[in-house]
Length: 162
Image (tube, rainbow, N blue to C red; front, side, top):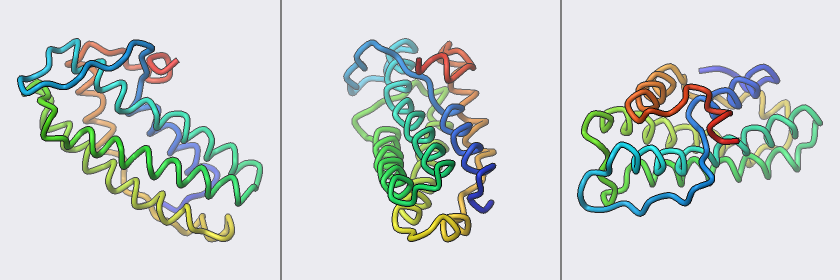
């Protein structure tokens, strides 16, 4: 676990970019049968891309020393990570079998990150924000890389999200 400092905010933005990549195409609707690799790639990008922008917004608010903007951005980040966790864990989505274990890692990481953002959304100072703990991203970063490899997605998440 690390304290949220200016360097940690940058690291969180990096984690969001590591997990993500965006597509302009609408996401496929999940079906009862396992998604194809292409469908899974599109659904994956649609699931993780929203976390990219919120990481940038949070870092900008922190750099500007704007507590109100920071807590608002943290609340948006919390909601985006909750949504990602729900999509990763949905029983209506059948991921290709070879990435299912890594999808569970990302679901669990998203739940943990959302909890940290919940705490950040309630701080009254950036000094208080510096004390908030975030889970390690080692497992989720590895899982995201393996998923992108299997789905044929670029390793440059920023490029994928545009």
